Length: 136
Image 1 (cartoon, helix red, strand yellow):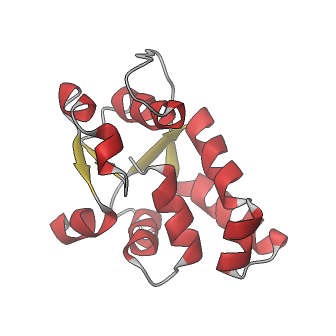
Image 2: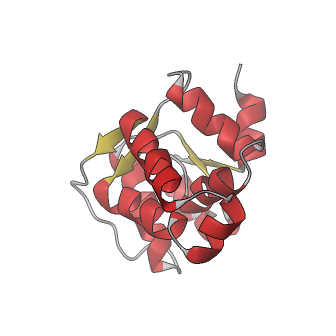
């Protein structure tokens, strides 16, 4: 499961670890999942003017990026809500999608946000670099 900050970083830095995770997912080397609400958050963050400017993409190109992402992200239906679990309500979307997807790993730059709570749901929390290094 990818936190929104990972998607934003992939958009801004196509040669970084976050973008490499998306490339591997596109090649079906790893599975990514998201609920509708989490994917909507991905879209909302990616379309912010500061992310669009940093990426150097046009609105059309950004639309293609998001369409491409949607084509290989497995949809997750949220059957169970555990709110509130976290301090940041936006992080609840990520946790709910991860738990409902039975994800083993949550990839984020905000490890502190999920510390403790993720363990209750048997989720390993890793940075993008840590996760990438753990892959074969």
